[in-house]
Each structure stands twice: as C-alpha cells, then as structure tokens.
Length: 284
Image 1: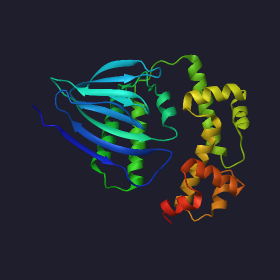
Image 2: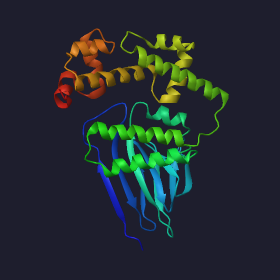
Image 3: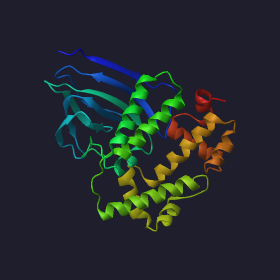
Image 4: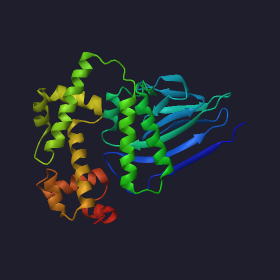
C-alpha cells in the first residue's frame, strides 16, 4: 500500500483583488482516501498527475453528478459548491492543486467553458497543459518566494489553464454576449478613472441598460455597478499600497472627485478606511 504524502502551503503575504492564490499543494493519496462533503470559499483546481479517482459535485441547481477521472485530467471546485472526491481503491490518484480567487476569475472560467455544471478539465493543447503543470509545481516548490513572484506564477497558471482547456461548442448567441461583456470590461479598464456610469458602459456596447445588466451579471455574477466599484477599489488599493499619493489623490485617480464618497466606497469594499488600510498594507 502506498504511503499517504501531502505537501501544502498557504499564501500569507497580503490581500490582492485581481487574482490571489490562497493555498497550493501536492498529495499522493492512499486507496479510497476521501475529502468532503465540503464547501469552499474560493476556486480550487486539482490536476491529476497519476492514478484515478472520483469527484461528486453539485451543479448550479444543486443536482449532484459523479465524474470518474484519471491522470492528465483535472477538476475545478467552485465557491459554495458541495463536493466530495476520493481516490480509486486500486490505482489511487496523485494530484496537485491551487486555490485562488479574484474579480475576473468567474468570467474568465466561464469563457473557457468551466462552470459548476461542467467542472472537468481536459486539455486540448498538450504543450499548454505541460506549462500549466509546471506553473502549479512552481507554486508548490517555491513557497518562500516574494508575493509578486507567486502572484505572477498564479497568473501564468490561470492563463495556461484557460488556453489549454477544451472549450464546449458555444452558441452564436453566447458568443455575441461574450463580445458585449469583453467590450464592456475593456471600456471600464480604459475609463474607470473618469466619471463613467453604467449608462455609459451600456451605451458603449450598444445595448439598453436593462438587457446589458442582465447578461453582464449572468457572466460575472456581479451587477455592472458593483463590478465598476470593485475595479476602481482594486486600483485604489494598488495605489495606496505602492505609492505615496494622498487619499484624495488616489480617489481622484480612480474616478472619485469627492474624497468622502471614495472613503465610504473603499471601506464598504475592504472593511477599513483608506488610511487604516494603507497603514496595514503599504510598502512605501
């Protein structure tokens, strides 16, 4: 019987909003070794290095499905999803995992066809799958690297995961909606520092606000207004952490000419006012 082996690390170098790793590790399982039923607070991806195992996971409606998996495949666990997974009795699996989250993760995964009703990863591009595995191993083996180094490799992991995944055939309608969402996000990224509104974003896509809000929330799990606020607060946190700009200057830089309104929005997002957050997180 193989010896059970597990190596894991927890990221503890501050909080980042765009993309952040939480844990990463590797596990060689004994026959029948199980985990769950359990709910996660973040996204958790397992890539199977060797052996076989089974995932039992709920979809968006709560219906449970059983998936039988083998080496070279993987599975994504979604926030709030009830799941159980266990190793095969004859050929128990060895896997490597990364737990992560961020404001663009749900949208990015959905564009790659990964959602609660289709959580299984199978590679379409072998070379990119190998890159993905290399990036996952890097995270496990370099736990003492700097925060930016680890976050950088988390970006490379997610990029290779998305680029290597087999994407289900999309309908013409969903493809068109994806274009609208991408156009809206690009517009926000290029204009968040100005006083843009949801009406401006919808107008940019050529859609009425009601329909635009519906498809945007479906794709990102956030309203356009909340996404815009979160994006601005992410940029504000970066400026507070990495520059010596005053709170008022940071607010104006992310589209809030009124410092009081900026401070309220920031505290609503992070639980601390900008000055308190800077004292705990600033690097300058």
